[in-house]
Length: 62
Length: 132
Image (cartoon, rainbow over all chains, first blue to last red; front, side, top):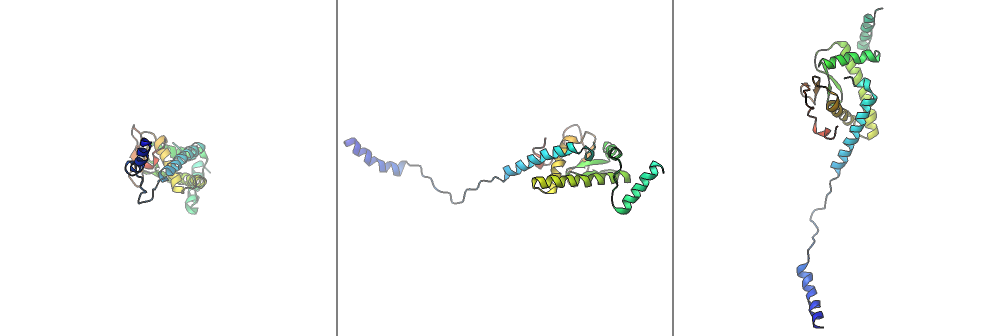
């Protein structure tokens, strides 16, 4: 009985003192996906470019 | 009519009308190929052929005819991918400069001077990062 009381009394202290406080940031979180999208476009274009050159050798004399 | 006269007549018509008559494919690329080998014509980072040295009117006309066809092909590619024709052309430029220009041949990046490719790879523009 005695130990139980101590535990109950200890809980608020734990809540106040031991918690990690999470605070919302002042500014909205921005995740920039433009870089990845841009990179994918470049990769696709490079593949298209390779194909175009292979399919039109007369346009790409060496 | 000799072959020379026909070519001359063709060139005259092309100049007069502003159109470039397409000569047989073999003959067309032979002149340009020789000019490329001689460092008078080269690939540009913008995806088109450029004239680096002094070339005859016939080679000049061939280069322009090739570039007109290239532009049409780039336009199709750009439409398919939803990008600008310039972006599509630049992707081609990454490929030609990265994979096709041979040592001793000339190339140009942007408005820079014509350069001759050495033994090593050409330093490509940063947007070519994934060209390979």
